[in-house]
Picture 1 (cartoon, rainbow, N blue to C red):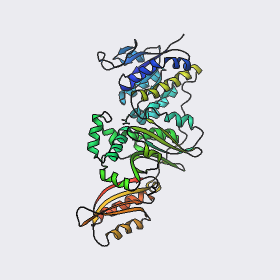
Picture 2 (picture 1 turned 180 degrees about the vertical axis):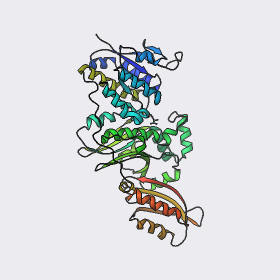
Picture 3 (picture 1 turned 90 degrees about the vertical axis):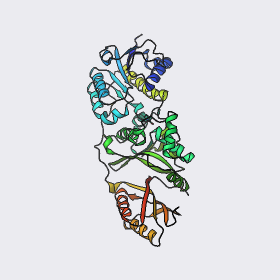
Picture 4 (picture 1 turned 120 degrees about the horizontal axis):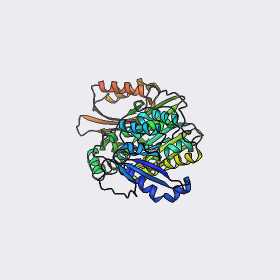
Length: 432
Ligand code: HSE
């Protein structure tokens, strides 16, 4: 019986999971692809490092050429991360007619279209299910499961670190700093959490999701990004009182032919299905014209969950090999990218500010909103600790981003507005 040989680039958290799944699920793999699957060589940084996984006779090497030059290796699995150097490896692999499976969202968000083109020129498959939301089969869900539908909106909790932090802040009433530290101690946040907490990791995933969902090339630069570092316990407490849950939400929205893609802290009604996605879990909410609302939920990271997505991609490559159709499943974008203008982006907003507690201040504030045709859904006015000041918390009805930015500018110029503490997007209405 023939054996399919794999070259694995990287033996870290995900790489070890790939080794385990290929070993432990070998019978199922043989049943699906018709022959044994073996990891022949593994690229590592340090040959002498102790490994938590039994590599079953795979040859460990520090020289990528040993893998790329091996004519017996048909598929490269890339789980080393990194961008420029890794891109070079994958292009070389594709040019040498080796199919590629990657978990690398940073690379795919930046160079996806270019790499897919090289794959197609070489009749090779390039699959990247694990790059978005770890173990959730969302890319295949969009590409295959919803192939017949027109997707008009995607909303995702696609970063586990920030979801964990916001869940704990909200449940315990603790500060961002306290929960981040705790998350780092428990291994739920990286020692350098910048890419997660500033929203960049989620933005990369949303660029990939939007590109597939809307069949157009959406780049990282097209995604408006805000992170969670300025969210306070007070914001979360007020959100709760108003019937909302704070999440870092990626939104990709298509109206007519124009799209908006963003990642920002967003208030969702407690009843929204994404509001109950807690801790490190991920979920992607998909609206299709025909199917209506669907939600994909599961682990967004971790060794075995992410490796499941990687090995499932491998199975698809191998099935295509049996059928002799590699490189034919990639679909070039159907549409040219057209981004919405700020006048076309509508949302509700939560705003919290400290004002002078004087007669007429509230009227002054509301008149700025009414000049722009924006009314309020909810308002709370509370006395501040400082007696001469009041705290105003409000949720607007729908406003265009253009109008909202002008309102914010005018509010900042009012002498009676002492401080604008926070401003967040709101999706949907809470029933309180
Ligand atoms: N750092 C990511 C997260 C996991 O926190 O969700 C890998 O994409």
